[in-house]
Length: 143
Image 1 (cartoon, rainbow, N blue to C red):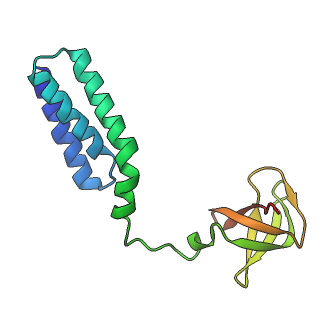
Image 2: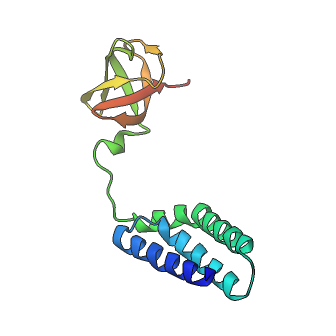
């Protein structure tokens, strides 16, 4: 009976992966296939579940980053994404609590904020750490 469950799980997870192409359920499909083989060999439910979890998690952790690197090879960063990691100059005091702050990067002015409650003064060089909506998330550059 367990063999049929694992076989159905394998097929369903594989179909989900084919439809979504998210490179997530494929690893669990592989885990279900291994659990199916463990059930076929006559091991108990505990061994099946442990093998399913072990194979799924190991494959997910070890191979997904590599697969994503090659899978998303042709994906181009947007203009905004390309700003992450660059330096910017504060042109208006960045104070997240007061919802103020502007920085200039590559000749363009952007609204900015910090992740915490830091206040960054005008003229300070900052690093762009991320983007939230239309605001750059910045932090003081360590000298």
